[in-house]
Image (cartoon, rainbow, N blue to C red; front, side, top):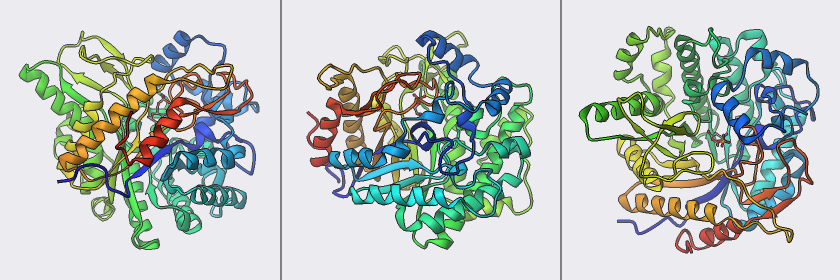
Length: 488
Ligand code: BG6
């Protein structure tokens, strides 16, 4: 029986290109779908949350964004300018002792329109320099190949993921990543949070939420194309780089029955199947699970199977599974149950849990439950690709940031992972989400901060951009140095 984390456990931190890089019109980069998401930096917290949960993005906003050449209302165009600061930022991560750095490649930086056959060499040079810098600072690289940002041309010209042709463009991009960056990447992830398309259609599959054309049928068509793309990408990676470690990822929605009523238990089972297991079953087992047939029939969904698709899925199963975990929720047959916010979804509230400032219900035990459930089901190595607490912080006049709330969240979640390892789970790594403050993905603001490194920028992108170490920075450094034993 294990007593704690393996000695080569990968302690790390994660960011994504669209939320960090900025430099949206530098180095030959094309416009991407995340560059188009709109925020007025003067909006109040309530206004931001209302928009984020009710009307996150529309066709009208997209069309306006295509004509706007400024970054004033487009936080992802600015990010935290990691593009020009990566040397300093990666040095700070190295100083914490991080063993792995997770970031994403931006498709539009390598293929500005997405459908070119040859890549933009300036983009390749950027990634080679930046990833080499991560290695110089003692970190392995975990590269997400697509974290929501696809070249806008693929949407305006081809309709995005609804169009099966996009699979080939994606695979050409992936081939380039494998061939040109293969020596610098240790873990590959074809798609961030595969189930996002279902819950956040613009992020996941570039369909407008609340649009009459965004039907369940269209969403599952896009998801099917992504499953095929993912499987082919895994197969190609194994052929190009023997021994490559290529994984799958979902946003994990850990759920408990709200009561011991059998109806609630059934609801919990089905929520788990439809929100979580469907995606990991296809990626890890290589076929659509039987329980989805009934779901597809009930909601009139037709999956656009083509000859050979079933073999493709079988041949492209993953080497490890990863997930984001931020909160848990409850499942109930009671439509009137109180709701609260959660990552990508509105969740049913659990009266036994405390919520973060943004309403997400904090539940370290749910992480242990998740790790056990996933390992029992697949017996594949697991990687916690995202976990963290987004909240506001105060930069003191002396440049310190005291964030005991973040340290508490961190400590309890690391403890939960340790328990899961002792339970027998093969957990290989953990990347704290938003290791450095980045633009939040849902609300698009800077004030929802996850970082252990503070970035002095506000919701309008104003500020010095200077980086500061929070108290949690020193906490994580100690935690890593003791391999998860010293959590005080
Ligand atoms: C995950 C995404 O869903 O949640 C990240 O992969 C995102 O991109 C993270 O930042 C936290 O969500 P938010 O909306 O608080 O930034």
